[in-house]
Amino acid sequence: MNYVAIDPSLISTGLVVSNKDTFKIYNYTREKDVYGKKGMKKWFKMAEEHVIYRFVEYREFGDYSEGELTKLKDYDRITDTIIDDILENIDIDEPTEIGIEGFNFGAKVGDLVDLVAFSTLLRKKLFDKVSNNIFVMSPSTLKLESCKLTYEPIVREIGGKNPRTDYKWRNKIGISGGNFQKPDMYLAIVENERFDDYWHKHCKYVKDDLTSVKSINKPYEDCNDAYLIYKVLEQKNSH
Image (tube, rainbow, N blue to C red):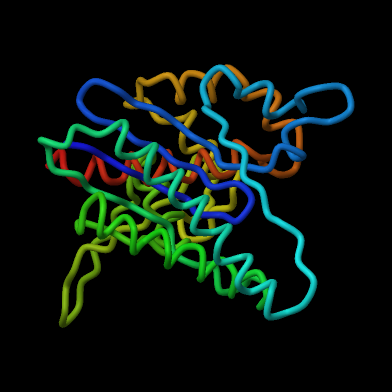
């Protein structure tokens, strides 16, 4: 089985692609976000050994109409690169399952419209060139599933006329999976006792650095999301 997991972003798409023999993580980002005046920035340098960087570029434009067409051409070029990397790393003789994060409708309208255009183009190419087995995971679902991957449920038996078993998932400090933020999703990776790959080990190794700041910085933010989507797909197919 091939797995393809994508956290789409205009400036920092995370991709995990694997087959029975390989497991790779890519980050499609702007060169100016990776390099400063003194060289590679801290967070990108920390992940450099484990993440393959692909630089994306957006061209300048003069007016609205020109801009809309220029952006579409740029999205077309960037998504072609993503598809090429996927096809290079999957076994075409095996089935492929794709997971991709859906849209955050709390984003600014302009950013959301551009992301929808980018993601829709990417999904169409995935469907046409890779596999029609595509699972679109909402951000809220990914948060909850991240919690379920690592933490045991709190089970409560409810009696009455309609008895049932109620399950709730929380992390070690009591945060509900549905309310996870990026740091909580990161901890779901490092606190998982079943994960045993290089990204899990790396995230544990840099835990002090990543938890010393309020937010999870790029490229970890997007690579973590793609990694968690991958682990959800993997677990779904292990039953």
